[in-house]
Amino acid sequence: MSARERILDAAADVMRERGVAGATTKEIARAAGYSEALLYKHFRDKEQLMLAVLKERMPAFTAKAVAGEATVEANLVGVAHGGLAFYRRAFPMMASMAAQPQLMAASREALRKYGAGPQEPVRALARYLDAERDLGRVAAGADTAAAAALLMGGCFQQGFLHYFAAPPDAPDLPESAAADLVRPLLPALLP
Image 1: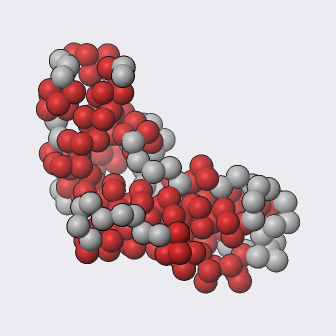
Image 2 (image 1 turned 135 degrees about the vertical axis):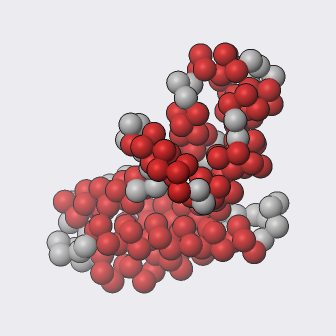
């Protein structure tokens, strides 16, 4: 396993345990068995490391929807299923950051320079729905931005509730939970 991979694994563990706000690069490097200097050879800053953890060590979800492939419903269920798992696992990492206004403002600014943030999954899903609309697989008058926000909001809320109610080693919510979130949106989306 490469040093970068070990650092990502350690960062994911430390950030889940302490939250992003409580995790230090020094602690992450120590957990990986490396110096902090080596960590900075692979990652410019803590925000870039956090983004790499979110992209490479968390369930992917918006990438599961490819316009013109499968059905719109199947793609949305795939996105929602991944979103439920992502938000459940990301919540303990991100909650500490959101609870501190100064840290939240600094994080917002830092993530902006990477073109990242919690709005990006909603935007990616809206782009997917727009592409499906261009193919005629989503109704011409559908409000794709609202549908994307509703689905991602539902995933966030249900992911948090599962995190709150279930023990840490509980399995992710089943695909049927994702289908339950998608089903009410279909009449507004499908032609």
